[in-house]
Length: 384
Ligand SMILES: Cc1cc2nc3c(=O)[nH]c(=O)nc-3n(C[C@H](O)[C@H](O)[C@H](O)COP(=O)(O)OP(=O)(O)OC[C@H]3O[C@@H](n4cnc5c(N)ncnc54)[C@H](O)[C@@H]3O)c2cc1C
View (cartoon, rainbow, N blue to C red):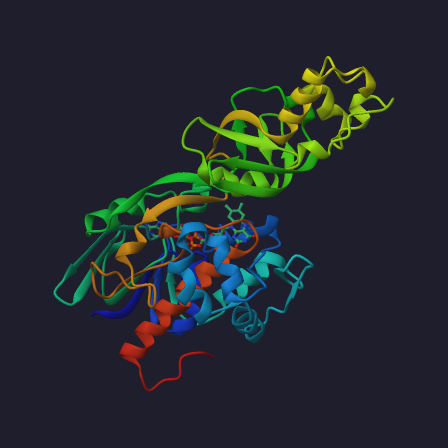
């Protein structure tokens, strides 16, 4: 017997699609439990969305902002919060706009989604997918399931132990989709030169740039390189070992390098960082500096050239995945295979840190569920 809808992957987007389809779907999940990545979000606190208008939010999706627009307008943060409130998860937003559950963190979010209707087959990895006529044949380790619609919610490549290890992209490719090569995103930056290693734990406001790309925010030095929001948001731009610029000021001429104070106390950067950057100058008084030395300080602080790479180890997200040109942004339906919908991290969409990835996971699920609902059960009202 053919089922109405099969959801492949019981992660953030799959669980949302299942909840919105209200018992009209079957979810197949390769792991022994659902939502393993969801449980890690926000360090277990689950930053489930970000307040702001869809127009503000779309900027967090880099070059994919046009593609995500429909999803963000259809299921914006206030509607997401409203949905979670209705299923028992009250939320609050912090001063930066990040939204979290008031109590219970990620476990509460996962369990509330899980409490909604819809059969789930655990330990059921999907191993093949094909469409014959109007019917999808979904091969699993436990047998073949048939369905009229398929929602792919198999995730990206980061934190493979959560079940999203990128292996499903082969199957999506076999059914005709182009897969953009994956690279780590929202990851720490591993520096080729370890001169900052001893600064591990120090944070400072900084700018990272490469050509016209520029990210500004809090930087954290680590044993191997750079982390913190600015490094994480910037990491997606590094291709293999790549060059980029680190600066601590946009206006080097505003640095007053006159007077009797020690150089290290006049630079508006932590003293330990000054010692690493200017070991031979730090102990001098600024009045003792020559023109050449002052210029060297200004040049370093306003744009130091570094080489480094993003790493899968610690990456919270991935670039790459199904090419969004092959997806209808209004429904998340594939333009290659009708009746197939692709959500969340499985698409070539990534975002800044701050609750945006989950917002897209949920809003892409909303569009797919709504589209299927309107085709199959037009007389039923869609949202709870
Ligand atoms: C450490 C960490 C912290 C994060 N924190 C945040 C945060 O606070 N806020 C935020 O917005 N985002 C955060 N993210 C990102 C967010 O978790 C993801 O964007 C989101 O979970 C993507 O949802 P998804 O449904 O596309 O994929 P996933 O949640 O990864 O789900 C994919 C599911 O598909 C299953 N699957 C894969 N292949 C198969 C197969 N062949 N057969 C059956 N099942 C399969 C997997 O087992 C998995 O359960 C974080 C990510 C990480 C790693």
